[in-house]
Length: 277
Image (cartoon, rainbow, N blue to C red; front, side):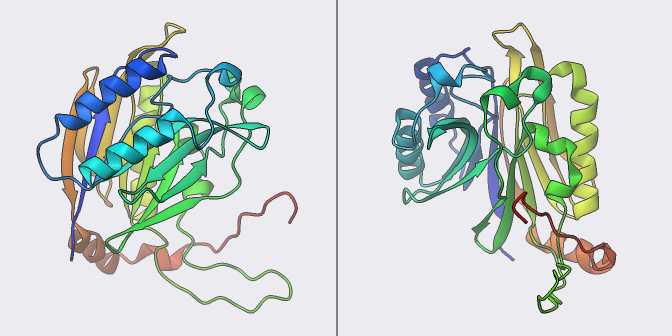
């Protein structure tokens, strides 16, 4: 079974300074000498967690997306993280999954952090993004989404709506769950606990990438980026310091755990409905 090599970048961010952040991150990415396939950056990696999308937003043709295309192509890797995007008159906290070919997928953050006013500035996403790499399925989410387990829950079977034929598909929907974040140190216990919970309940690897340092609102972030196996065991974590870490996720281990402990087959069926449904 093919492994998946993932590199996490836990870093400080220059507050609302796109040029400085892109330069800093390019230097860090260029410093990675070992083989890697996916590089994960924090939430709003080009600006920090800002509530000024009117000033900072870009389009999908903007400088940061073009930067991601160039870096992914030059390094021959997949690059992911979230940025502020303006589209059809709305602002989104958008995670971009950039392939080395320039093709990309997007996920708009579903759960906006109302405690900081994110719901007043950004439009919520409505669809999950599950990417495919080398036979791995990867569920991509952003920060506050972590507090809402249904949005990440494996859906091995879908209960039929009235008039639909029964869907009897059994098995895991994805293998890796990635969260990119700007999660404050004040709530780091919740961050660490919930990351482990998501791994255990979904029998998947979980990768959580957070920033470190103070932001422009003097809110401190301790990082605590983590990589967790499908049993909830912590394979990597780092607090308070900038760090670049590369790991190979083991597909055989994942399959063995699911076969020996086939808990997913006992899960409740459910369907997430959009408002129009």
